[in-house]
Length: 208
Image (cartoon, rainbow, N blue to C red; front, side):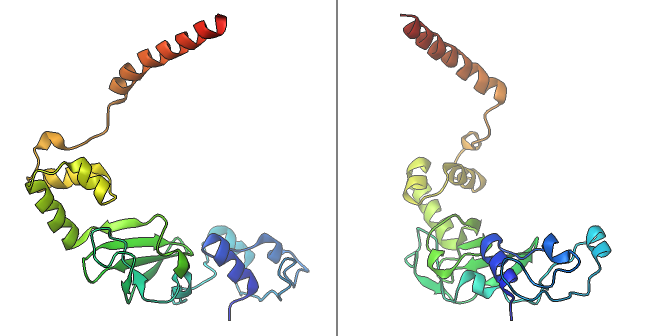
């Protein structure tokens, strides 16, 4: 059975933590939730030196992500936003639940961290681990047809850098199409003159 303190911390922060007020002498009841404080057996001096998670690796984090099945989040897949993922792999990363989702119909794999209930699985930010075989086959075919990487990125809701990198790595695009970071010196040289012009124009307007 989970204590109210643990349930509250997990819901808000994604994991429970040691509350300092619970460690004070003479405090036997949580002043926030009114639940009896249980002795963990961990000495206070040990907490200062080592990390002791409140939950063990065997704790079940499945409720953090709701009940299966879960949706595919691949815009190219015919099963996009449909509940087709029957199982997920859950592990702890820095004490918080971290789940891996893989669509069986397209191979698209994504991760989510923290407390994400089932009703919020269809929206929100995800970390894409692998685009999957369907995505790669579709992008390959479109690039061979000569479709613009920018149009592909807009159509399938991904970054154009991802399309360009994939095209270069697979030999479908020339190496110079790989998009890199703009050097700061070049960026500054382009922006500073425009900034000065804008500021001067506005100063002249104010003086008038």
